[in-house]
View (cartoon, rainbow over the protein chains, first blue to last red):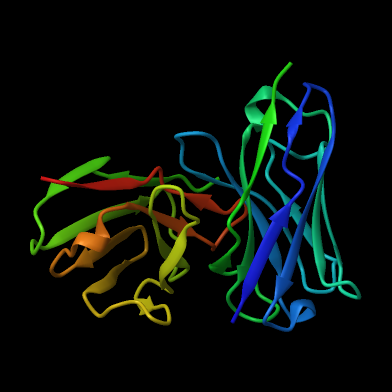
Length: 121
Length: 107
């Protein structure tokens, strides 16, 4: 059974940094692209960033380009999101999500429980 | 960016009723369209991918259809556990985009 466990969410000050982690299990991690999707309080879903199975291809939403960096360590089975220059509008629950087909950036077939990032002074 | 528009924003429905959700894309997305269900305090759950393919474990009362820019999700007979928010999402173009969601509430 696929399981995704996010961690690292916290209260951060505007301009600060945080690193989110996602620990996957139950599938061949290196064969699947992974993404981060966020949800601001009371709002809808917003795709943030995606990374290919090998880590060589990365895609970011314009709203986070230059501030957030997605990465993965296949040897440790971990996915990360390094967040810098945080803004109040980055406040959200951040979900780690697995793509459905090997090596593709298709639908999200599994989601973690989410980790809350709050940006406030 | 492909804008996904869902309508209506809220549906008031009685158990047992048929429910139809609409999702419109600003540009064609081929068959790269998924639907998700989200209950309060929970992560989203994949219902449908590729316009009409039900995910593992999704009841047959859920069905998807459409093509190009117009898509629908139908629940043939709404059950109590189906009260939730439903999102469509395109994965044809970057950035990946979601609709704003349709909330199904008890009538």
